[in-house]
Image (tube, rainbow over all chains, first blue to last red; front, side, top):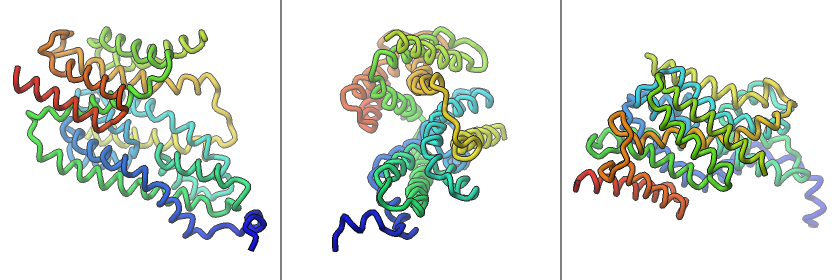
Length: 241
Length: 104
């Protein structure tokens, strides 16, 4: 059999094969997601979020960094409106993913689109878009949404599970261990490696300074102001080059 | 009760963002200015949260060595910068904080 000749005339892969391939592609990412979910569970409880609510956040919001943010803001007594606004701003990047996968999902039913949108996380997006791009022009894309579903569900299950274990562990740890600080440390670990150019460093410094200056503002508005100032400074610095 | 409402609203907002281009307005382009602004959201918002946690103690600016969170945070920044390792950053930061809390 000539392998090259068969490749262009292949039938679409069956749903089961696509689904399993999606799970398999997600496995290496889960190695990084499991500790993240554990830490989230631990720190959410340390920040004072009731266990059931911490778990519900994983199911309803289902977006790691915004969940950390919400736990932190809730723990420092931030009003609900500011928490929702902050979570939405941090999750705005998902609009990019949405735009990027949209052309591949065009022919699907509304139910499929709604389900896959719920599963559109950083991690599921990363492997799915890679799969779509790598197989473009080779296998017919008819069943590739099953790959998305496999990757999305694998991530979903492990996120819920690791959150639950983290919540359980968090309840065993006494307050004197200052575990709430792991939240700040997680943010540091996420932010520092992302400061790759002058513009993003400027954005971070401007936001940090504004947050300190505006700390006394009511309703945690200092956080909103600092975020906006940081974004504006970043854009200005980048525009100058 | 407020917390549950907060979670529900944040979940709805997140879902609407994810569904946006897939269903609500397919075939529309994101304006370039918005794209540009989006890339600065994580550094700006996260640093705005980190700074007060490190520098403000009991409601006022605290720059001395007895502020364990500041020292631990600065060391954690160094670790994150050199290693890019999330777990290591958290472990080192916590170790420094607990050391300072127990011995000073």
